[in-house]
Each structure stands twice: as structure tokens, then as C-alpha cells.
Image (cartoon, rainbow, N blue to C red; front, side, top):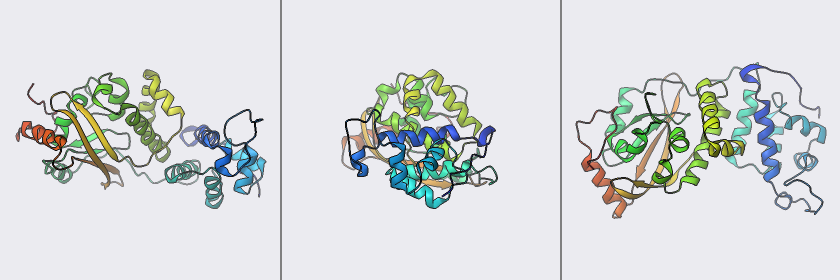
Length: 309
């Protein structure tokens, strides 16, 4: 098999550094015994060696070395699958690797999945109709572009944060990493921070030409050591669902489950619809009902709700 081409690219299509860092990070995290390789005391670095990954993938060491240097644009899907299996990538990591490969092909015009589009009125009406479930629509950059009154009451610390300012919408990563109050608001801040960065990293693989996304990552990397450290780990997550625990300044502790649904929009844009629910009969449901009772029906759909203090 011929080594992958060293075709040079420049500008926004040149993502070789991201490819290199991702593959190196996955190789370093893979313990030899997990991959069926003998573990010896002579290993000077953690994880597998390049030649071991190459052997597991059925390619030459020279070939894999070039691949790990970022020359991935001409690689077939079959070979990428072999590398993904050798590195024991999970489904999200595999998808991310394929997205990086597609972005590295300058001759192939990529479809623009996520664009900045105006949220249709019908979508806002749908979200507003969920009076007992906090719900919001977010972009790939994790901007909150639509929300219902209960969501704005639940996330009032974020909507009222200085990180929102005059930007026009709240942004979850900015609130997580640039507002010190987020550590008190999110009970599981560490886990949430990792998930937030992993989702943002996956979006960077899908949309490498998104200038606003690059600016957001640059801003957070400059201003937050925590973000910079997590971003360098190259962990990815396509979908984030599970349990959310919050310390609301007025309602108290709430524990809810949340689910994410793809929301196709005009111009091939796809945003996520996030819906929170509390288990029936629990104190969290009672507190959510209390928040709902504080939400005035005349609240503007674009203004955050402030519960009475």
C-alpha cells in the first residue's frame, strides 16, 4: 500500500495539526494490554508505539507515520476504519476522524450543515408551548438561539451573566469558563465542562471553516486555563445527554434528565433541541413547578425571567 499523499494545503482546509494531535492523543491513551500487545517496562512513553498501531491496522509503519503527520486527505474509508479499530475509537471518535478526513480534501466541497439562520416562528412557538419542561435550541457553537420562559427562569444566572452582554444570545462555553459563578450553579461542574468542550471539539471537526467558532475557541483558550487544558485533550462527544444537577439561586437544588434532538432548519442548518424533565413526585419536580409559577405569561420570549427574590 502506498503511503498517503503529502499534498500540501493552506488556509482553512489545512487541518493537519488537528489530525496529528487527535491521532497522537488516542494512541497515547491506549494501553498496550487493551490492544492485545505485550506490556514491557521498557516503554518510555504511555500508550502504543506507531509501529504497533500500524501492525494492528494492517499498514506499514511508514504509511501510518505519514497519516499521523496529518496527510489524510487521500486515505480510503476502509483504511480509516482499520485505523479506528486499531485505536479502539468509540463511535463519536470514529465519526470525528472521518470528519477530519473529509475536511482535508480541498477538491471536495463540503456541505454546510450548520449555518447562522433565523429561527422560524413555528419553532419558537413549539418551544414556548412546553410550559412544564425547560427547553432551548442551541447551535453547534452552543449559542442559545431560542428558549422558553421556564428555561430562562432555570438558567437565569447564565442569561443575566456578563458573558452574555450585548452578544444577543447566551453561550454555554462562555458561561462555563468565563463566569466564576458557573462553578456554584452547576453541581457537577467538572463533568459538564469536559462534556461542553468535547461537544465543541466535535463541532470543530464538522465545521472547520466556521470563523466564529475559531474565534470562540481562541477567546476561551486565551482567557481560561481550564478550557485550554481540556481542549488540548482532543476528547470528542457528538451528543450530550444525561442528568443535570443545578443549584438555582432561588429554587434550590434541582436534578433533571435532559435529551437532545436534531432540529433541521432552512438552508441545511441543523441545531439541537434540548429538553429537561424532572422525575414525577420528586422535590426537583416541585421546585420546577415553583419556577414555572414564577414565570409570568406576559414575559417576552427574548428576555430572561427573573424569579422574585
